[in-house]
Image (cartoon, rainbow, N blue to C red; front, side, top):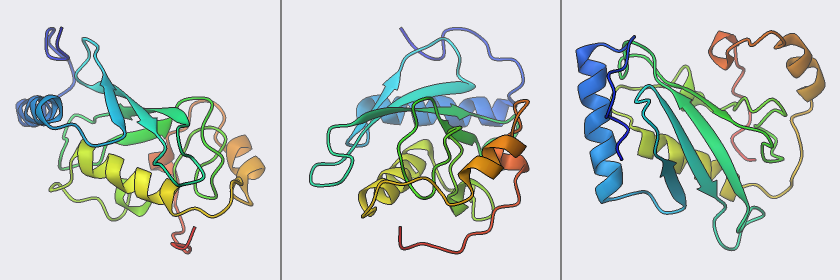
Length: 160
């Protein structure tokens, strides 16, 4: 079974070709600690994340949902944790992730694998399990399905 078995509405040919290439690369050489859950939807990937050994998240498993926009890779995908999301100072309880490469620092040279490795690195470098200080306010303001891509993020702390 392949994620490419049915046509996907909403993606350009460039985006479809790029995602098929990334999916094939993933199948041949998956990043350590990640598993792609196969579906028939090329535009939405569900990825299982396992915390790295020797970290606060060792052997814990979470799921990422990656939604690809029509003009991927020129536009960043939307990446969120599905519930329950890890307790981390840059991950909100609604699954939104405060990570610059998902927003302002996105580059078309990035791939799903590079995003996953950045998220794993962010988790692995954490020294404490806690929600962001503004979690409750942020989550309340995100009701009704607001995308994290609609947030004006303030990237001020890369030490967590």
